Amino acid sequence: MTSLSPHWATPKWLYDELNKEFKFDYDPCPLGSKEDPQNILSWDWGKCNYINPPYGREIGKWIWRAYYESTKGNLCVMLLPSRTDTRWWHDYVMKADEIRFIKGRLKFGDAKNSAPFPSCIVIF
Image 1 (cartoon, rainbow, N blue to C red):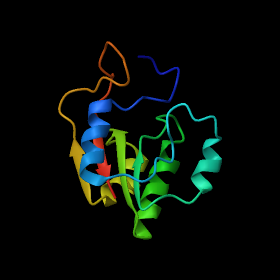
Image 2 (cartoon, rainbow, N blue to C red; image 1 turned 135 degrees about the vertical axis):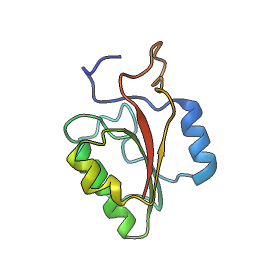
Image 3 (cartoon, helix red, strand yellow; image 1 turned 90 degrees about the horizontal axis):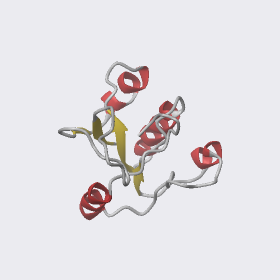
């Protein structure tokens, strides 16, 4: 794993476990989408959203949008890096209904090695 790409594929077991609990009806940022992220951020989202956003500099926009969707009554479940020292963490993640810290480090996609950062599930 390197940081050459901001995209980290959700481990299938984790998505399946979350989907069983929440029954997602929309994923605004599916891995491999050719759509411009700025377009996706302006689209209507579903009632129950799964979001594993790109982990680059734009991550704060995705977190803000999930928070905003929650103010409209929509559920947003996010897989995020646990970056508790960032502005986006304090501005939005701390307003989440629930934060589930993941023990250990995830192996994203079909990676052989674990991620170089801890992860969490944030529920708005």
